[in-house]
Amino acid sequence: MSDAGPAGRRDAARRATTAARLAALRARLADLGAEAALLSAPADVRWASGFTTPADGRVLLTPDAALLLTDDRYTAQAAEESTIEVRIVAAAARLEALADLVGSATLGVQADHLTWQAARELEERLGRPPLPLADLTRPLRIVKTPDEIARLREAARLTDAAFDHVLAGPLRAGTREVDVALEIERFIRGQGGEAVSFEVIVAGGHRSAMPHGVASERVIERGDLVTLDFGARVDGYHADMTRSVAIGPVAEPLRSWYDAVLDAQRAAVAAIRPGLSGVDADRVARERLGRAGLAERFAHSLGHGVGLQIHEAPSLSTRSTDVLAPGMAVTVEPGVYQPGLGGLRIEDLVLVTAEGHEVLSRSPKDYLEL
Ligand code: ZN
Ligand code: ZN
Image (cartoon, rainbow, N blue to C red):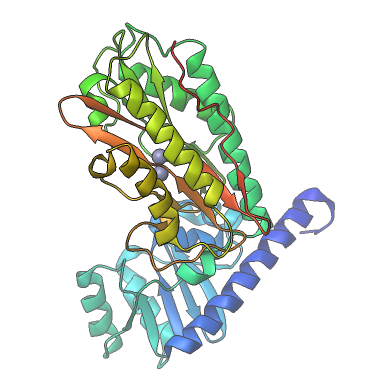
């Protein structure tokens, strides 16, 4: 195959990206005392190989090889997508193949992903226990490359467009929540998104008190404050945004809570910069909500990193050990909730830059009454 032309150059760039990632992973393995590693977590399999059905693949890194192991349902797809050598192995023969390839090398496995049963089977086949490693790729994926940032940016753009789209039509009294969610999903897929980042959350009325209330058959009513939390996935990279929209006038206390959450959200976004700790970012929003008497109603953390996973490092929370650096992508999403009454959340996707930050979510977030 010729490497000339845009497709060839793109393939060469993808292989170069993978080579840099695997070099970093090999260095990390050496630090951790492993000579080989079996990647099983889907986001890591995709990160290390480009294979887009990573739950059905494994990446094996040995001192002299990097292999994508998958089965014969994926022969053509793996050949097309993988940036590393592909080995087609039936699931029943995978352990045996692994043991042969690993030989006597110390094999690290993903302790925070591989099942206990799979670890036991591997131990039996190798004749020795694998080395359990936690957070193996965390420090390698926490700062995004320019290519990854471009994908996050496109995912955020598509997410904004989907929000515009439902504001212009489906989001109104008389529509079921599930129909708004389906319209978001249809729009994102139709505009070239790979998928929605997670099951779309549309929660109005008393359901808005559920931070993760996926769309139900409930009909949206006048007076609802409807929380929409969703994102587009582009080339494996997830966007994540929440807006809470009033359908006609919203009663107190929800109306005032909106202003308090927006104030806390804006203050926390303004604080995002390199050197800020995840704990301090969270504290900015928590203190603002505390001044409004709403600290106890903010029952989750401020935000999370996004990338090949919807929730990944770094964490912005009371227990975070992370410190922000340029190239990290995080959500900033304070919310308040009262069971039986309702709640709201406002969430942006924010990129940490050398100068401070750039908000990738562009959708308006001032109180909006349809
Ligand atoms: Zn979200
Ligand atoms: Zn989020």
